[in-house]
Image (cartoon, rainbow, N blue to C red; front, side, top):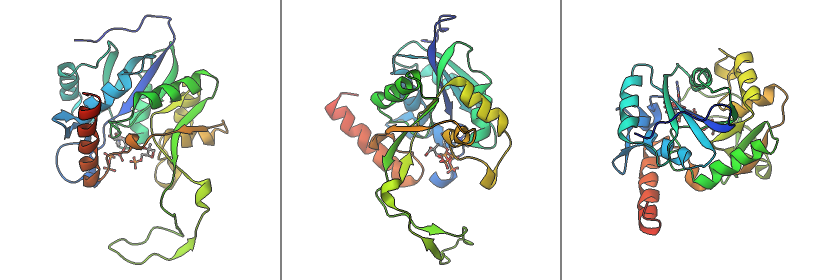
Length: 255
Ligand SMILES: Nc1ccn([C@@H]2O[C@H](COP(=O)(O)OP(=O)(O)OP(=O)(O)O)[C@@H](O)[C@H]2O)c(=O)n1
Ligand SMILES: C[C@](O)(CO)[C@H](O)COP(=O)(O)O
């Protein structure tokens, strides 16, 4: 059992891991965060990835609301590689709501908060450290990002689905576009203010990432280089890719 309390009054990085989604795009079955990768739940990989960063002392896992006890037991069974304080709280109906519920458990002495999707289990520790360091250096919001590799088309509105053709309204300049990942890092007050201000907004008014909410406060958001292995497990093929990355790490790093 590696659970310890952070030393009171000592600034540290706290991480919120939203893990309460169902994983509809992955297909039917248990919640996505509990699906196995190399025999270990996706969520456990994500907690290990974040706990590998030396400044991280607290990890708040936001579990499916009907499964928080099971997630607690699972994390006790698979402790992270370093002693960090792992807390589990029940999540909400949307990612934004789940992050807000996680923020309610944020320790007062955290000087950096990272929000990291459970669904990005393979993020390298260097990416985590780089985001936390950039916040500590004075940026209120820091996001890992990669250039997009596909050409992106704009449409006026989502179509009815079912393969119906969608008229194109434009082609944005790809050199100005970035695909953003997690962990996204924040000065705690910036993220707390954003979630308080925009709580409950959904649909087109909601934000699909936390930095989007901080942008709306008018605070600067900066990008740092992301990593290919920080991809999000979203569709079935992503599980195949994740298994391949882990197999390669086992050969090259003994991971
Ligand atoms: N109500 C929700 C919805 C999502 N998430 C979390 O937010 C992260 C990113 O979301 P996504 O990949 O979209 O996960 P799901 O919502 O589970 O996927 P889907 O949209 O396919 O159902 C995931 O770690 C997911 O568990 C959450 O904590 N609470
Ligand atoms: C936060 C995120 O992972 C950044 O790319 C993404 O916006 C989550 O979106 P999802 O639709 O909840 O997967």
